[in-house]
Image (cartoon, rainbow, N blue to C red; front, top):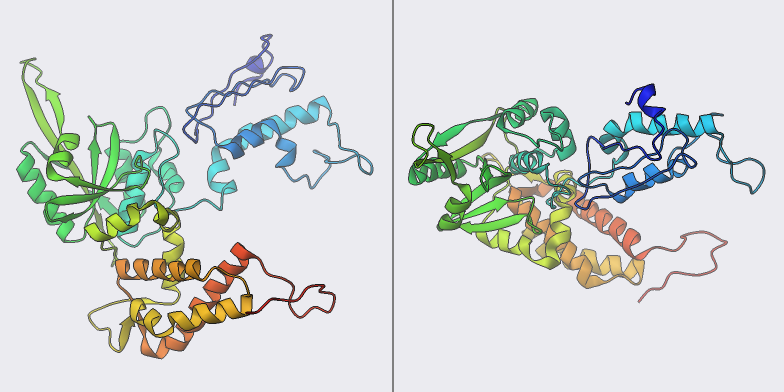
Amino acid sequence: MRSQKEMNTSQDTERWSLRQPRGELATTVERHHHNAPQLGLEVKTLGTDPLQFLILIRPDMIIHNRDDRFPRSHGKGKKAQPGKHKQEERWLLLRQSLDSFSSDFLTFALMGLYPQPNDWQCGPFALKHALLMLGKLVDEKDISRHAGANWWSGSDEIQLAKAARYYDTELLMIRRHDPEQARREMTHYLRRGIPSLLCVHDWEHWVTVVKSEKGKYILLDSKDEAVLTILTWSQLKNTWVYYEQDEHDKKFYRTIYDFHPVVPKFRIRSKASFSLAKAKYLRRPENRMLSKHWDHFIEDLLAICKPRTPLSENVFSLGEFLRRHGEMIVDQLAYWHGWINERQASKLLRHMRFVADTYGLVIHEEEEKRAIAGITAILSLWAAAKFGVQPLYETNSAKHRRRR
């Protein structure tokens, strides 16, 4: 917060930069003293999302006034015109709370596979993706807070290691100068199901390597629109290498290949297993919804299915379950709702199957009926949200449901 001396400056406009910008495009907001006395703002950041922009210019629309400090109305049908001291108090309150705004206010933020909204959060995104592969669902904003990441310097391996320890994992530091040796050792970790963080593009950007298959590598890159990226070894090597100039011989450069395996200290219940085919499936534009809501699919399926273990008996996959009951569930949903898109409903079931297969989730035979009820309930909520529903069992309802 600025001092009183700074707030009493005689300049026409004052400038203040947000500590944690969001978004990709720079946003400038100028508020003059006659609009916001002594608190005129010009916000220049790496990016501000629309909701932060709305809070800055129209705080009266966001803050719910439950006391006399910020009245919302004055008389019937007339908006309040808050006094000068109330405007100052409101702006001060907003500026004090902006640091915790992202984590406290945006409770609806996604935690799936989607691109980073700015240029500095690639490190938290990379660690989030590694934890996701280990079965931990963590929001990148929480990782940024625990790592101490910021917009002016991003995050380094020390900060990410600090955040990794908070989530009961260890971020190792392995440095090799020979590319083939670095490749062999990293592949050894990948075969054990341990993802690795790489700092690529001359140590400017963090990505997560999750799989090696047929000479190709599957990466989670938060700068890529599809997030899931497939690179050959030659492509990965060229983007991975860092050239360090020798202190004594300025003409000599040494190659560096750093990688950081994320080793869990906990027992993994469900681990993601990607393949080239699955990565290509998720990269399709029509499957972006699945990527963005990846964590929601996992959470819902874990309430219905169980991870497969060596001791699992009398179980079957979600694919087998849908072969038995999928058509019936969609048919009944279409009958009782009346006008859903059956192709979209079937596609949603295929997404569920894809996520369940990725994490090795199965259904126990004694839980089959419960699974039918659970999947049907999820589809019913989806249909109600997407296509709407009319009142049911109400005498004042003017319209009746349509049934085919």
